[in-house]
Amino acid sequence: MASLAQHVAGLPCPPLSGASSCRRPTAPRRPPSALVCGTYALTKEERERERMRQQFDEASERCRTAPMEGVAFSPEDLDTAVESTDIDTEIGSLIKGTVFMTTSNGAYIDIQSKSTAFLPLDEACLLDIDNVEEAGIRPGLVEEFMIIDENPGDETLILSLQAIQQELAWERCRQLQAEDVVATGRVISGNKGGVVALVEGLKGFVPFSQVSSRTTAEELLGKELPLKFVEVDEEQGRLVLSNRKAMADSQAQLGIGSVVLGTVESLKPYGAFIDIGGINGLLHVSQISHDRVADISTVLQPGDTLKVMILSHDRERGRVSLSTKKLEPTPGDMIRNPKLVFEKADEMAQIFRQRIAQAEAMARADMLRFQPESGLTLSSEGILGPLSSDTPEDSGEEPTDE
Image (cartoon, rainbow, N blue to C red; front, side, top):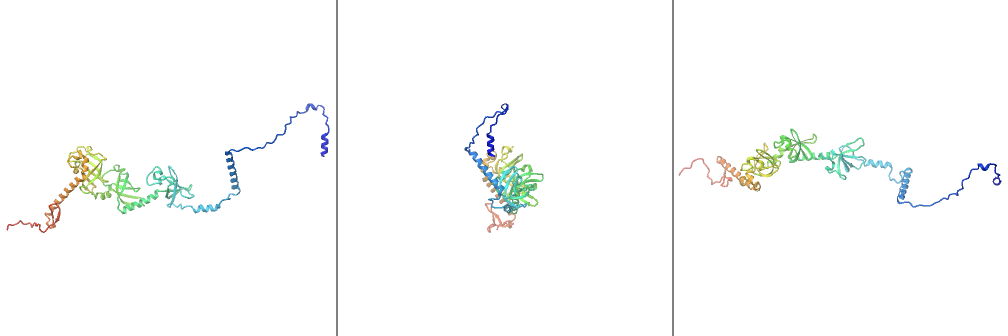
């Protein structure tokens, strides 16, 4: 067959008539293109992308063909480990956690569990605050929280610091009540029946009947009062306080003639009210100076600090009468030179107390004249003592001449 094809191919073929007119022009023959092979250098970024692509391809292939290759435990082991580290989410239980993020509404807490935990703003502190940072709650803080609720939607645990602080505050109030200790409370609100004071972080009620001085809630707002505990009932949420009982302890130490430091609270036409350590005393206009005081404001102003002497103390009515007049070295010094009055206050008070003691001794001596059976007598120094044997007794009979 091959020789036949070669023979046919070699036979001459005469041209047909007219064939030259219908022959198509042939395109010029091009030499076959040569295949060029070579290499070029990749940039640093291209090499890095190529490396990452290869790693991704390899990781993808391993995940597809052998997903557990190189893993030290099985999915069952993972489930068991998660269950073993799960916490007690019972309401009321305590849990330790770390603050890892704060927001305007509260803080997120890491409790080392699969559950998410959140501390709302109103549960961050006993006091009213605008943000959790005011209560010292910042990322990194490790604290013990109480679980108070769980969000059923996403199983987020709701935590509280306020609940723990409340328990401690109630315990502290019970302790102070048992020890009959005077606490300090700040008045934050009031109504017709009394005022509400903040004590140990808790809100307690002080009836006006238990306030030592006659005043209004508006006048007491923002002030600090010495208080004693009357009722501490955590279950009922009742905390009743008394300023009158606390003042009774303080007032017991106020002796007639003692000098105390006070602050002018307010001025009235008839005198000035002086705060002497939580007790309101009246410095009557007639007790300011030996000289006449026409206008109290020319001598005293609210906020002035001064030394005053205790003239009288009515514990039943909670009233204390004060004087600077008795402290004047010279009549009128309180008007002309009040600084001298305060410098000499203790010295003048000592003289005043000596005069009071002598007057009391003379009064007792007068009583003894009518009670000789008491066996006491008054010495020349004004001191009471036993009746000596050489002191003649009054027999009640006139002496007779022998």
